[in-house]
Image 1 (tube, one colour):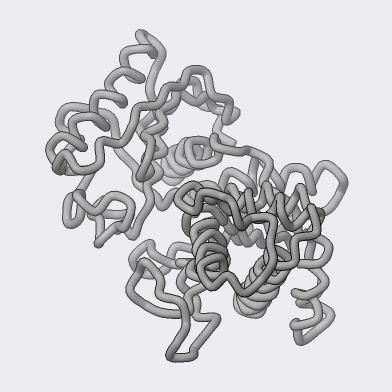
Image 2 (cartoon, rainbow, N blue to C red):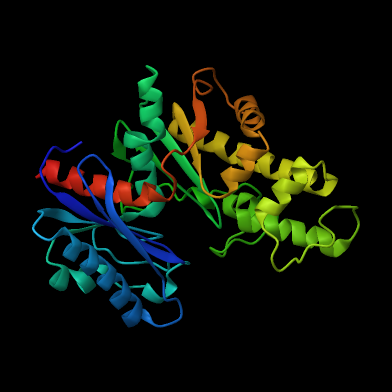
Length: 333
């Protein structure tokens, strides 16, 4: 952690909301606000709304020194240039650099990162990783997955983000789980991606498809399918609904397969799960079952030497991670 006096302006910009905060050196949110992401209004207006949110945060700081601006965004994005590359949740910004668009008016140095990767960084230093260290368990490598509308993640090794050549490493949602020609289609255009099989969107889609076949008795038969969510399916699972049990068991199996592949790749000692779907996993007490299935697929006892737990920082993780990114850049100077 940096001990420099001053604060960081941090933003977590997703498809639905732009959350903006002023964060101190300890990762505490001193002030925060959010505005809707104006989807469908054009890139110029989207940039204006984001810029105004950042200027509002800067204004709140008054005479307090601002060390920099950290922005967590749903990618893919080149973290050095700030250029978006076909971001599914912010598609109107494709090909645009946030750094070039905002630097002149915002004045302070701007740092960009993938939202899930920065959430991983926050969990390592101030969330799940900190919880482990408090009980005497050192964390060398953290694997983070966020499972909600989509699936994202990041890998932190010895406190540092695994970035890759262009800052686009650990696109965890797009590892291939189902290689059959009939595999579910993913938003990325591929088939059989982890995101297409275990996200909240995927759970709802699988359930709607099953309901349309009307081949199984289920307590979900009278639900408005246009409003059905993954949480509805988890609730039905808890009530012993056979259709929901089948779907959730498939999801757990696919998720375990994906995580075991990632453990073989990165050898983490801590796996952290965040996002809306984890609420369902928690309420149905499925974490133990998931870990058991993961361990059964691993090749060695050293790979099996990991803990798995839920994320600790909630919706604030992206902004906290963005502030840590700025602090890290200052330490590198």
